Image (cartoon, rainbow, N blue to C red):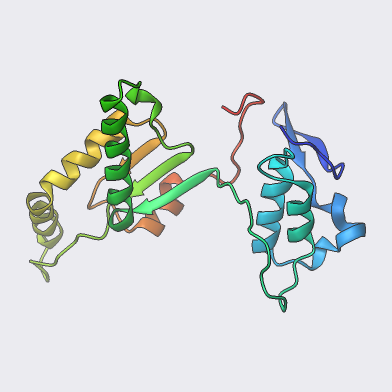
Length: 198
């Protein structure tokens, strides 16, 4: 729940539904946020929406709203993404870490089902392709089959992870490259959540 220190909370109507938003233009007079690059505006909206006085403070909002491209960075940005996109090269170690944390939780008699990613994670398997066949109509199928043979244990592990962890999806190999799959199938233009955070 946002502290709304800057009076930016507003409501918009769309498709018969009401949505709570945090307007950047509420900071315009004091900070001239219109001059900010879009990437900084994304960070600003994030901290403005999540400002709670504990993990995100009004000072954090002011630091980003006052951003100066020529200044040396002097503060940490408490950015909290709503979703994480990973490819298998970095995603597999993350799932291994989660599995290890579950093992440690089991060792101390804790509830292993509490160990999950805190935000939605999409892992796209696209970095293990080797080219064995090319220049013919069967090349894709041959390469995909060999990829599954070579990486079966890893793919079974990721399938287990998808079935075991909340907020975790794994996109199988031979589907496409991570950025293409993200844009065509996974990404949302706008993410919404209920007032309870769900």
